[in-house]
Length: 157
Image (cartoon, rainbow, N blue to C red; front, side):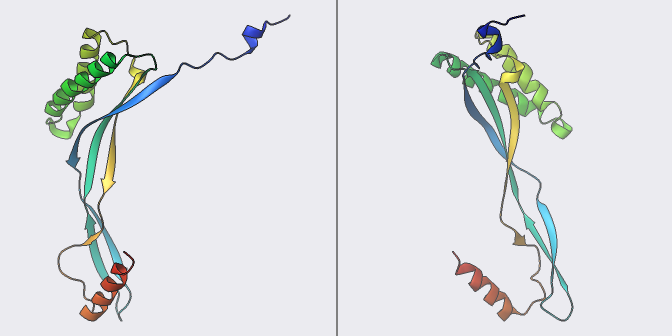
């Protein structure tokens, strides 16, 4: 049985354009860690903390042939759905935020004539971490030694 060239060559992939929309940023939970300072006779625990910032992002993959009006409508839909998701996020645990966003965005996109499927829309978060800082009282390390550590760290800047 012979096969035609069309049957053996793979289909060309559809070209898409991806755009990201930032919905907003909010403070995450602080992180803590304990390190032991072995410079003295007895190890001293040093508690450090850092802050986190969580950014909510929506990524849309649209066909490369999408018009600028379609992208504008998608951006407006994201704003409308983001507001609804923010209200839904007030429910303890925020469990309703993502479903509310997808539902509202889908309704808005359909009303504007956008032809999107669920796989073209991604709702996700990115986390940014702050620098580690000492928590509370200063550690039980000689002040001169602390200044020496601080000055050597500053010289690398």
